[in-house]
Image (cartoon, rainbow, N blue to C red; front, side, top):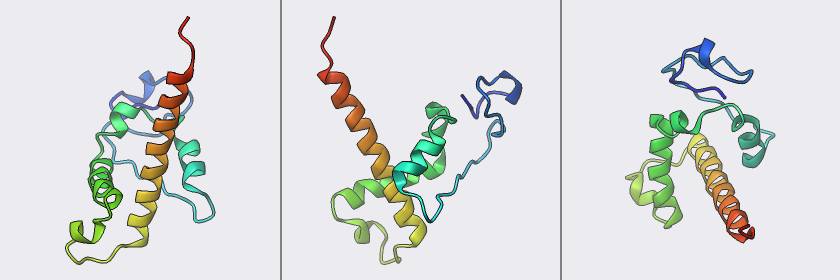
Length: 111
Protein backbone atom coordinates (compact mmCIF):
# COMPACT_ATOMS: atom_id res chain seq x y z
CA UNK A 1 0.00 0.00 0.00
CA UNK A 2 1.25 3.49 -0.79
CA UNK A 3 1.43 5.40 2.48
CA UNK A 4 2.27 9.07 2.17
CA UNK A 5 3.85 9.12 5.63
CA UNK A 6 6.34 6.33 4.95
CA UNK A 7 9.57 6.66 3.00
CA UNK A 8 9.19 5.12 -0.47
CA UNK A 9 11.52 2.21 0.28
CA UNK A 10 9.45 1.07 3.27
CA UNK A 11 6.08 0.95 1.52
CA UNK A 12 4.53 -2.39 0.65
CA UNK A 13 3.01 -3.25 -2.69
CA UNK A 14 4.10 -1.97 -6.07
CA UNK A 15 2.94 1.65 -6.01
CA UNK A 16 5.78 3.82 -4.72
CA UNK A 17 5.22 7.09 -6.58
CA UNK A 18 3.80 9.13 -3.69
CA UNK A 19 6.58 10.90 -1.80
CA UNK A 20 6.21 11.28 1.96
CA UNK A 21 4.15 14.35 2.81
CA UNK A 22 3.25 15.04 -0.82
CA UNK A 23 0.03 16.73 -1.85
CA UNK A 24 -1.48 14.12 -4.10
CA UNK A 25 -4.25 15.07 -6.49
CA UNK A 26 -5.30 12.24 -8.79
CA UNK A 27 -7.43 13.47 -11.65
CA UNK A 28 -10.73 11.99 -12.72
CA UNK A 29 -10.88 11.23 -16.42
CA UNK A 30 -13.80 12.82 -18.24
CA UNK A 31 -14.96 9.44 -19.59
CA UNK A 32 -14.92 7.57 -16.28
CA UNK A 33 -17.59 7.33 -13.64
CA UNK A 34 -16.90 8.26 -10.04
CA UNK A 35 -16.97 4.56 -9.10
CA UNK A 36 -14.41 3.68 -11.80
CA UNK A 37 -12.21 6.50 -10.54
CA UNK A 38 -12.37 5.14 -6.99
CA UNK A 39 -11.61 1.61 -8.15
CA UNK A 40 -8.52 2.89 -9.97
CA UNK A 41 -7.04 4.63 -6.92
CA UNK A 42 -8.30 2.98 -3.74
CA UNK A 43 -5.97 0.00 -4.01
CA UNK A 44 -2.91 2.26 -3.85
CA UNK A 45 -3.53 4.82 -1.15
CA UNK A 46 -3.37 4.46 2.60
CA UNK A 47 -6.72 5.66 3.96
CA UNK A 48 -5.15 7.18 7.10
CA UNK A 49 -2.97 9.46 5.01
CA UNK A 50 -5.61 10.18 2.41
CA UNK A 51 -8.37 11.33 4.78
CA UNK A 52 -6.07 13.92 6.33
CA UNK A 53 -5.36 15.71 3.06
CA UNK A 54 -6.70 19.27 3.15
CA UNK A 55 -8.56 18.65 -0.11
CA UNK A 56 -10.42 15.67 1.38
CA UNK A 57 -11.31 17.57 4.53
CA UNK A 58 -12.60 20.47 2.43
CA UNK A 59 -14.79 18.31 0.19
CA UNK A 60 -16.13 16.43 3.24
CA UNK A 61 -17.28 19.73 4.73
CA UNK A 62 -18.84 20.86 1.44
CA UNK A 63 -20.50 17.44 1.06
CA UNK A 64 -22.38 17.98 4.33
CA UNK A 65 -23.91 21.15 2.91
CA UNK A 66 -24.65 19.50 -0.45
CA UNK A 67 -26.29 16.51 1.25
CA UNK A 68 -28.72 18.86 3.04
CA UNK A 69 -29.48 20.85 -0.13
CA UNK A 70 -27.64 23.92 1.19
CA UNK A 71 -24.60 24.03 -1.10
CA UNK A 72 -25.33 27.57 -2.36
CA UNK A 73 -25.43 28.79 1.23
CA UNK A 74 -22.04 27.23 1.99
CA UNK A 75 -20.46 28.79 -1.10
CA UNK A 76 -21.59 32.34 -0.23
CA UNK A 77 -22.70 33.07 -3.78
CA UNK A 78 -19.64 31.62 -5.48
CA UNK A 79 -20.45 29.50 -8.55
CA UNK A 80 -20.26 25.71 -8.41
CA UNK A 81 -17.29 24.73 -10.57
CA UNK A 82 -16.94 21.57 -12.62
CA UNK A 83 -14.10 20.48 -10.32
CA UNK A 84 -16.31 20.88 -7.25
CA UNK A 85 -19.06 18.84 -8.90
CA UNK A 86 -16.53 16.10 -9.67
CA UNK A 87 -15.24 16.11 -6.09
CA UNK A 88 -18.74 15.87 -4.65
CA UNK A 89 -19.56 12.97 -7.02
CA UNK A 90 -16.39 11.13 -6.01
CA UNK A 91 -16.99 11.74 -2.31
CA UNK A 92 -20.63 10.66 -2.64
CA UNK A 93 -19.57 7.43 -4.38
CA UNK A 94 -17.07 6.78 -1.57
CA UNK A 95 -19.72 7.31 1.11
CA UNK A 96 -21.98 4.88 -0.76
CA UNK A 97 -19.21 2.28 -1.00
CA UNK A 98 -18.56 2.50 2.75
CA UNK A 99 -22.26 2.17 3.52
CA UNK A 100 -22.60 -0.87 1.22
CA UNK A 101 -19.58 -2.49 2.86
CA UNK A 102 -21.03 -1.88 6.33
CA UNK A 103 -24.40 -3.35 5.33
CA UNK A 104 -22.77 -6.41 3.75
CA UNK A 105 -20.62 -6.94 6.84
CA UNK A 106 -23.65 -6.63 9.13
CA UNK A 107 -25.62 -9.13 7.03
CA UNK A 108 -22.96 -11.85 7.30
CA UNK A 109 -23.73 -14.45 9.95
CA UNK A 110 -21.40 -14.52 12.94
CA UNK A 111 -19.66 -17.86 13.39
